[in-house]
Image (cartoon, rainbow, N blue to C red; front, side, top):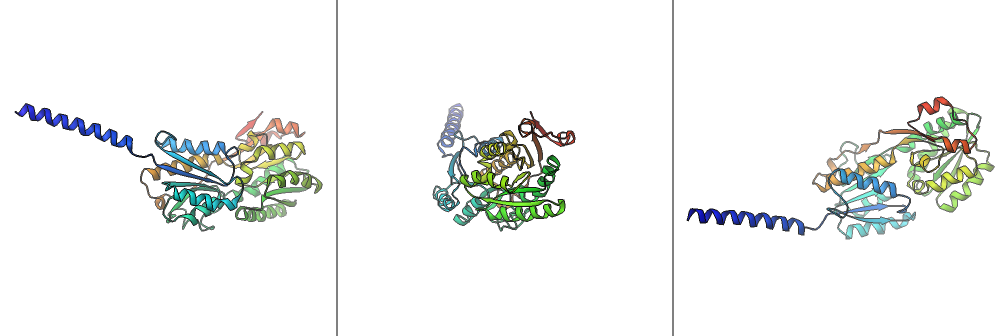
Length: 328
């Protein structure tokens, strides 16, 4: 009788374990929303870095997590509707790329956690209460990219010391980044004795038209300021700079990799990887308001020697020594 009961008990345990496995298999996968103001093609490396971050924390797209992608294709006015779609989809967390996307997501929901990547100061922009204790429903990664403009102008001046005027390209549709960048650029110009020409663009056509303009202005170099709009058009900008023989410095090594001359700034790709890690931690149950905003500290200086030769520039040896990456 005792043996019978023992066999029945073991059978019940086995059945319970099997049922548990079936129940877990039937549970719907969590859904992550991806909100981006730009295009899938232009942002492919950053979306891949985001998925890498998810994977490092145990979530693989299609296996145990679903990602709903929403792209504004450069039309910022579409972001509120796209954010509303993700809220209606009842996603578990929203990954928002760039300040306009974060604002749209925050306006759409106060309940769904938001993990952002931005070059702006998230405290000054009202996205979080503080970096250490963001509170609310948003946290993420900031690279404070506008603060790098002065150093970028300094490095560009070392590359083209005879230049007396420098052009600065900003996205007029994103004043959160454009205005402080313009202010920093003018301050750097006064310090170095350089004339600064601000070139404001907001469309691909504007970018095409900007290069003949800055050549006419007599600019001896170009600084491309941090912006999601420029991220997705790095190939176009790099090609135009070469065509117009314009030495340019960018804020991400992705630009020299695409043919740009040089870059100085934090790793944008690593920032999106960190966003993926945070999104995964939230999926595992951590509270968004308890996760401090990460400040990117991985600075990279890259030079494309091949592009320098195409522009007829001799890269000083000491600059090559300073570079973290030299592309030949």
